[in-house]
Amino acid sequence: MARIQAITVPKWGLTMTEGTVSEWLVDEGDTINIGDPVMDMETSKIVNVVESIVAGTLRRKVAQPGDVLPVAALMGVVAEADVTDAEIDEFIDTFVIDESVSGAPTGAAAEGATPAAPPEPTPATAAVHELAPTAATPAAAPAPAPARAGTPSVPEALKSGDDDSAVHATVHARRLAATLGVNLNNVSGTGRNGRVSVADVEQAVTDAGGSLPARGPVERVPEVDTVPADDSGVAATSVARRLAKSLGVNLHSCRATGRHGKVCKYDVEAAHALQGGAPAPAAPTPELAAETAPEVEAVPMSGMRRTIAGRLQASKQSIPHYRVSMDIKLDALLALRKQVNDGDPGVNVSVNDCVVKAVAMALVKMPEVNVQFDEASQTIRRFRDADISVAVAIDDGLITPIVKAANSKTLTEISAEVRELATRAKAGTLKAEEFQGGSFSISNLGMFGVRQFDAIINPPQAAILAVAGAEQRPVVENGELTVATAMTVSLSSDHRVIDGAVAAQFLQVVKRFMETPSLMLA
Image 1 (cartoon, rainbow, N blue to C red):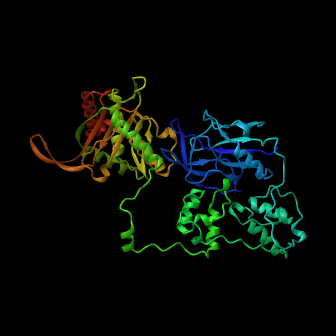
Image 2 (cartoon, rainbow, N blue to C red; image 1 turned 90 degrees about the vertical axis):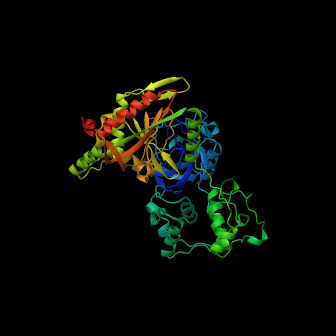
């Protein structure tokens, strides 16, 4: 029996509860292989690529860009070619999210089905469940293509051939071929990945000397000025609504051919074509825009921005922050850094890499700071190794990839790992375990010329180090005025866990490692 497979929202990490669909990377009718990227999805932490763990043909996109879906919600349907649209509709209508958030559907959609054992989920893999269609749904041929006026003429050469069920073709192309009696083995596909499209079927018939039925007259939609101006109440997909606004199309003028009676993107494009395909109204002149532009623009917060706001607000309200600062001279460290970089053209150790190493070694020396505080159980978790969270600015937010056991790594190893983590953080391809957890955080704004700043603790951690920019400053050494390269660091600590004297001693250890950098090579 043919099988239907449900692509659902994956769960990336323990704290993920929902995801926002950014963009589909495949089209309906595409063949999906295991590991293929199918969608970009945004969570409260990252924008990641959903990868497929199943091979088959994508028959239906259920989720649309902009949709916010809970974990295990249905996003798309993969099914074999002989599964009818009616069977897919019934599967979608009866799909229910398991309350245990396991991703397995329950209810009528699962009756009589034998779920395939899903592989262990990975952070960037979609949850996919294989289900057989219900026995109550009779097998049926694909629905015929819409009727057209006239009688087609298809050469016999296009009708013969082996079974064409395995030919990569769109659903609409397969329906048209069935209506005309065309064997798809005789049609060359020009679509994505060699897929046969409707245009390919029509071209094959024409090239073989046949003729296609004339298209019937298209029913025109009402003009925009005959319908209500306010189309906000029209049921439409988010993509269709944005497109209609950009093209100047009133949604009342569109046929609703999408699922559940919604106006879809293609309905808007069709209405725009019937109206003459006029371009969207020209942008107003700067003078007119200045007169009509609103004084305030309301910009909705992304899921990541909302999560950052909530976590930092809770941190400031619930954690008794206090801060200690210290100036650190960097001349010896800069000399060592230059020596390391000059010795190997492939190495580019930064000052921040040296800070990570110094802090990691200081945390091992001062385990009282290398801790997390579990507020629920009122316990302190003390770590043996220093897992350093390094703050990285990304579009619309901040993320903290972790250099694990940084105390046991060399400067060059830390440098390579930080660069690799930062690159993947900005690309949105970090795994959940690579940015969740950590025993201590470092936030460095020195590249912006900041002289000093304070950072907010990232719970459940108990401390974070704010690193400012390095600059030449006048200093007094042995009673004489001289110039040294120095920077200011500021340690924010949770007073429930770390006392002031401990924080001050910790900064002293960090200062000793950085001002005598040869100790970091021991």
